[in-house]
Amino acid sequence: MCALNAVRSPMAEAMAKHFFGKSIYVQSAGAKKGETDPFALAVLEEIGIDARKHRPKSIEELEEWEGLNFDLIVTLSPEAHHKALDLTRTTAAEVEYWPTADPSAVQGSREQVLDAYREVRDGLMRRIKARLRG
Image (tube, rainbow, N blue to C red; front, side, top):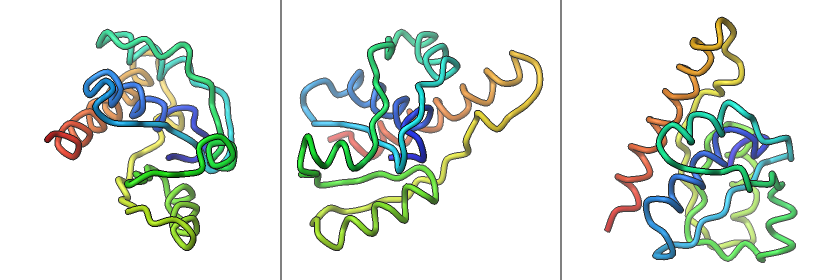
């Protein structure tokens, strides 16, 4: 879960699904709903993951569709973390906060921006593999 379900959480969802397939159930959402970021899609494609079918959703939409029957909610932004903690008042899910910079805030050349997205991608990949392995 991140702020807009546009950059960080879609990247995390796509990687978790890629690495773990159907052995775990993963969905991403945002505290609010944004638009999928093309740079996030580009850096995922660099590692062989196609996330073009991702459609951003808010945590409220996910709750309506799925009922929030999750064992673990990983939050990547302060806004998402506060929202997840509010949810755990009525849901028995563990919440972990993985502070993750928003690469869309980086300015500079296209390559500098892509490097910021790659850094986020690679950091999330390491954490996902370490946390969900086993």
